[in-house]
Length: 373
Image (cartoon, rainbow, N blue to C red):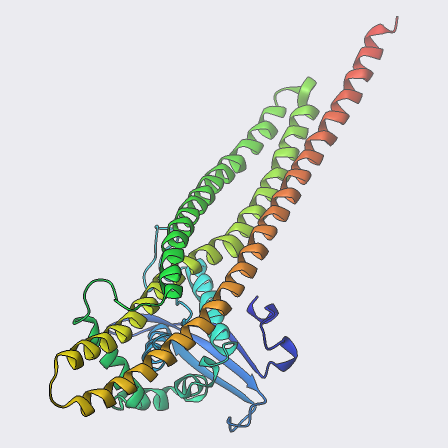
């Protein structure tokens, strides 16, 4: 879980704890939606209380993510789960879907809480503390300065074309890394979902396979015990398979898919950095062609240079932090999968070895009986 992650600040300095739980379904004349309880406990002085409890729906989380991106265009904002179901894995509003989303929303908020900059964002604080009507009122307020800065960056996007001329090599390397990472993580995500689907089909077949031996034993008195033994082995392997599937569903699939979403976010962050760089480059080019107003252009260029430097520094620091967390997540996830697989095969092997041993004993008893006069 996210609360167990060891970040640079160290767990002993953590002063903000968030839990997302207790989903509730709401049905109105025009829509059906789920709200989740968000409980916050903190020792921070900027909070008026040490504990808050609010209810939030998915669109509130979307609003928060949008505000964070506007305020911090070159920081890596954690991903949210998609609004709609992917791959036909589960039905919308099913218990499985709601629980999967709850866990993802819980991780989203805790990743923000553990981020050295995002954790102090004012909109994040409002999200955690404001009652529903207060949050709704806050959403209706016009965009502030940070929001307008975000809009400016997006507006520049339409004017920036092609490769940025003065992009530092570091950010070209980041872009190349993410292209490769995106290919690999998307492939792993696709294969993992296919494995889970095949495992589920195998599990469903096994649930029908075992009882057949039990039914057969009723009409085969001489081998009834053997047939019941096979049925018991299949049943135990079936339960082991179910546990293995739960491990894939709870640990492997969510992590892989979260990093699929992270690749989209990071490519967007790199693009926004390039847009800020492109704005500076265009002003430098304009200054070179201007014979008048050079002082005004020089002042604008100075401000843009500061803006680019801040964007670069923010992204560099966040990139290092993201890679560290990603590598920890991947090692932890693959280790967990390996341990689950090992337990699964050991359990199934021990089950069938025990059955074989009992059958050998039974065969020896039968042979001894036949040899007696």
